[in-house]
Length: 157
Length: 156
Image (cartoon, rainbow over all chains, first blue to last red; front, side, top):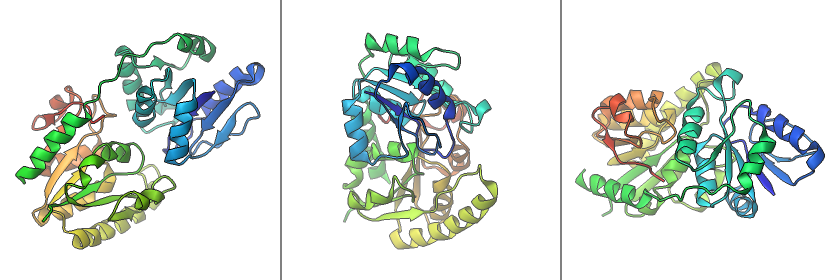
């Protein structure tokens, strides 16, 4: 099962779904989409708007591949679940986001070996092939360190 | 007596980052403030002292002006309700009114610039930086943008 995440922001990301629909017309793979505020219907994709946390966690667990917009939360959850992740940044020029920070994120994460980037003119079929053998760099959490520092600082106030 | 700490963030990614700190919430007499939407309405099942501001973004400028005004008023009421000694926020605009209101009353402001911005400042970051008692960045390059900030690495 391929899990597709469009994020929760109130901007559409039809471009990703149009490409996926084209891909799946002949393949008929199981593709579950969390479309958020993107209004799109397709007989080749199972499209939902939002999932609650438990349902979403289960889907991340069950998926073989994750295709996500360039949102940090979605990418991080995919990496932590150790799934091959393809990240497609929302672009300002298509009014998919208010700026291009997703492009920065996707570039940075790709550089560090965590994800496969899906840029505008890339072929999703080729990327999905790549995902079959993609070994993501192991993610080492900094969260505990961060929390410790914060507790120390709050104590000083 | 536990210190009163208010945790506040906009819905979506910013809240996601803030909730990475949830393990420390119970160290304090905490409150959790975010915007109300489909994804946040069940927070009350998992956390105590959850309150909501109205969801709005500057992309819909006309309605945003009304929503932001309402949020300023509500922020003031929330400040009076919880009287936090410290506010910890990951942004973005949602937190601006209450940080300024609380600062006047001597509350300490901790601002964590979002993980999502590797090279550029957020608007809320720019606005709160001058009044922050502790300003944290997650990417080293951001120290160039915020010289007085502390670089702590990823919140994740």
